[in-house]
Amino acid sequence: MACQVLLEATIKDGCHDKLREKFVELLPATRGFDGCIYLYITKDQDNPAQIIIVELWESRAHYEKYLAWRTETGVMDELATMIDNPSWRFLDNWGV
Image (tube, rainbow, N blue to C red; front, side, top):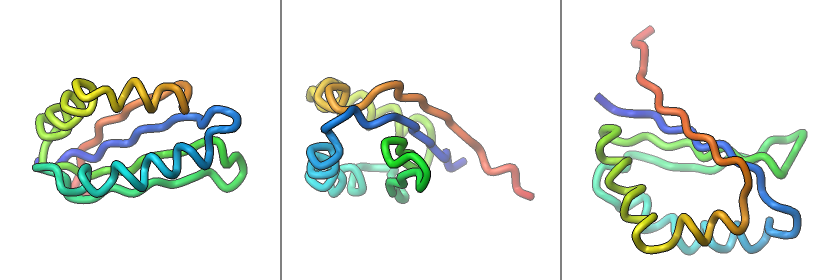
């Protein structure tokens, strides 16, 4: 079953442009990673420092394999210098 992933975070002060550039660099490989169906990034209209990354993966296992790869390559540590309070949610379609 497909797994919807929501990653919510706050962009640190002064990091908006740097983070956007990093996402532009990273996202082609993410979107091409085995199991990724789609991914897009949204910003809160009332608080532009708040972002939500909306992803759909073939399974949670696919996402966890992807996240392990990004962690092993140091990307997650690099992103941590630009964001605060990351929070993941893993959701199933309820079929309604």
